[in-house]
Length: 314
Image 1 (cartoon, rainbow, N blue to C red):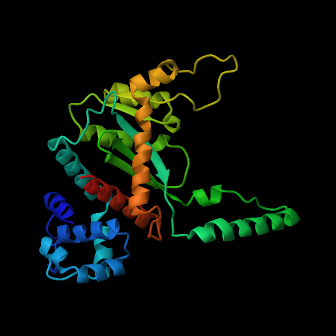
Image 2 (cartoon, helix red, strand yellow):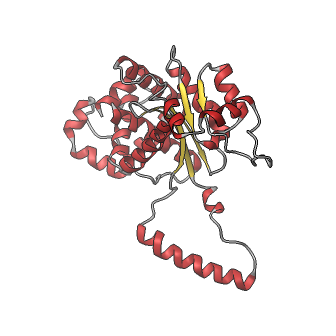
Image 3 (cartoon, rainbow, N blue to C red):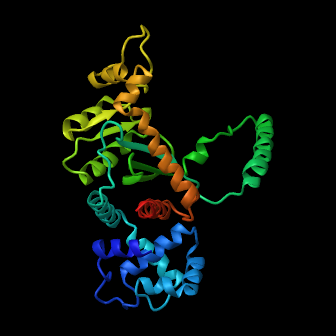
């Protein structure tokens, strides 16, 4: 909570408006939101917890705990994209000052991956037993009607999605992208990589990604425009009938570079799983289900999860 308060004091204004009531400052509200996220509380239970912890409130100069409605309105104000980018910029500078970042090349590169989160809380009993019974019943109806098909695609289209660029040395999330639904990882390649690249200046980065980001255009963007080394398996698309190499200069180079296990280890591609480790850490420590009811509120929840994870790393 103290770390979140000091971070917000350096990035956020004291009040949102000169006509604010001035009961709470924005850094104080942000610190309360990070406590809510770390302890997996709702807004009401976070208010009750803070009321019981007067020493926590004194650490951030609070005389009383904010109301749950105040916390909810603060989340809408503080967790927008522009303010979150400022917070991540400051966190990256802190990490560089504390020598927490690795060299981001070779053995410990920049790893990028995406993951889907649950849009609501579901018990294991409901997920494994009741949903299975419902699917069997619906399939039986479809056999009689021969109408619509039961599949996973309709559910996946509504799931929140988070992509993070991770320092493989410290497990610090340097940038992120939030969206809704499954689909290809190709559209968010540029924003995630660019934000991570600009937050670690004067470094020769090596970025390792899975086959979902495979594209000759992505290699050109990373290598020519940003001057970093991108390593992506050339597995997207239909293979050639004659068994030849894939099209494109850099995709052919990836085919040769990742041909053997020893070469994958030398170039650092075997560290790509560090991004999956961070996604697993966030789901285990902060929960895999989001409390938001709309796409915008779920994106705010993902922003808060990422910043809270970084503060926990610190």
